[in-house]
Length: 116
Image (cartoon, rainbow, N blue to C red; front, top):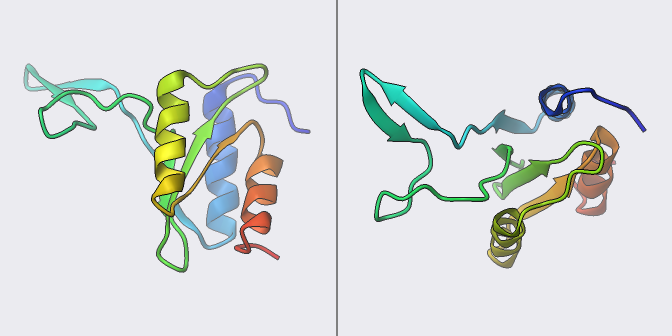
């Protein structure tokens, strides 16, 4: 199992793995940003509130299904918001899971039939 000192290093490794396997994906940043002094929340609900639990990596698979990966490092544990997002995505026929390593991503995508 690979070890990364920062979660951002694991994000990069997972994104490279997905790219090598021709799966379109990108890193999400669900933080508050400030543009020209205005507060911007990247992912908002219909009322303008920040959506909590948005996964670190989003993408889509060759069959058009949405892909959501919440990345954790070491002994990191998902929050209730993250669990809720993943469960909701799964119930809506998305491919969605937690990953502590590139191997986790590979194994889950193999299990779902997206990799050989």
